[in-house]
Image 1: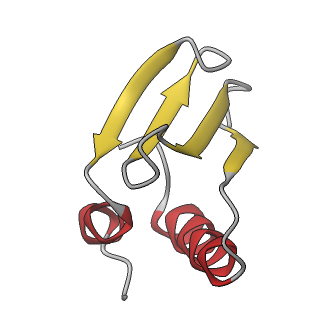
Image 2 (image 1 turned 30 degrees about the vertical axis):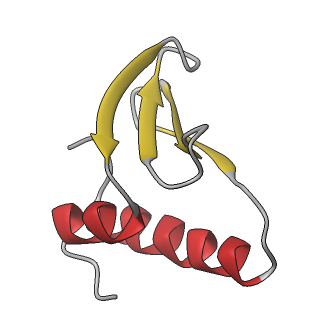
Image 3 (image 1 turned 180 degrees about the vertical axis):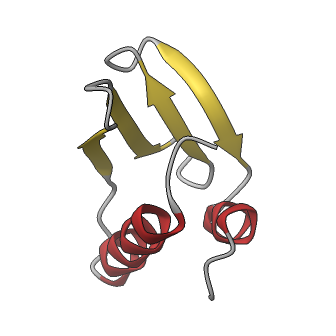
Length: 76
């Protein structure tokens, strides 16, 4: 797991706000080691991908936002 619980909760909140206005998302944050972590909506519009190496490597993949929240223990 690349994100802390607090980071995942904030990102999940941003995802749900994007849903409310029918927007897609691609959110970038820095890991403490300086690596960029990208959380984005997959091209299918449902799945959530967590990428590293400036987006070159898919590190985590979730079938949907609820699966992302469950994996990180974020309340839905």
